[in-house]
Image (cartoon, rainbow, N blue to C red):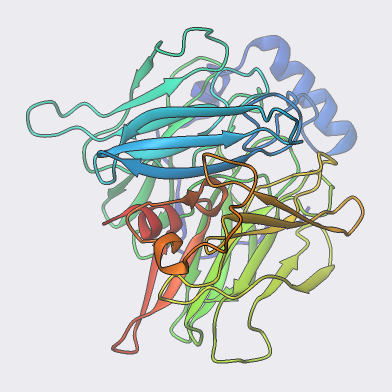
Length: 410
């Protein structure tokens, strides 16, 4: 595999040496890793991973929306496929942004997503913590708390960085003009600090496996002076650059979205760029998907392009609604509280109503002014959070932000 390089992109942390790396893995796994990578050129000991947004263990993404009620985050989850009566969960977990940050993932390795938030510390108690309601614990009131991070960190780039099928607690810190990714491996051993990216670069909420080695990489977006975006990825153990690809733009459109995930079913995350409203231009509402392991490019026009007034459809990322191992192109339409997905298994359009209370729409059409998504976190679909959002401002400049911060803030 050819490794692309770029000057001043990464700095190797002197503390991350072959000796400290070995401390995170037992000798048996190291020996097998060396033998197997010599044979096939990739890691093959990675544990199986569950489907994102699968809170019931069905192997399919569920329909998940957030609301804010009395300052608390309300998680409303509808099982997929919908039965009669419907299998639902309503959980109050966490407080409204910026008190807590939603964290998504499987933190106990049971192939089900867990409900969780990260709470930054303050002047009185500077220790930040992850608060997780683990799906393996039958007590819904049981709280698992993991101290990790400082008040100025952000819980970004969450992912499975050691290939054991369990997401690792991760925070990102700005240090000396660079991003430092502090990873606490779920497989044990000491933490890792990966210095990758400049503070002028951009981070998406979750990590992704762009190389197909069974471990997520640390990923950044970098925009040049013309608005052209390049995606860079570093190995989550060594910090070495392992991937770079120009894909997307940060200018020229009222709204645009970027993310990654496996849409082709080859166990490698693909790059996705979606154009929102752009005054009726040809690219409006188009999903551009770039294969990372080859030259395949898909362009699919789907949904009503979202605009800066939060009118239209919210693009959904990391969602496999049919359970075929490929992500589906999907959106959530707030005006009618409906999920729409273009299933990868058969190419058919599927829709599911879910407003947090009912799986059936009311007899009369809801008032859009009452159901429109607001940037404070009302009726936000969970799958919309794993992206970066580019929004044109009234003064003509462009604002680039994590989707979770963009949608959930006041």
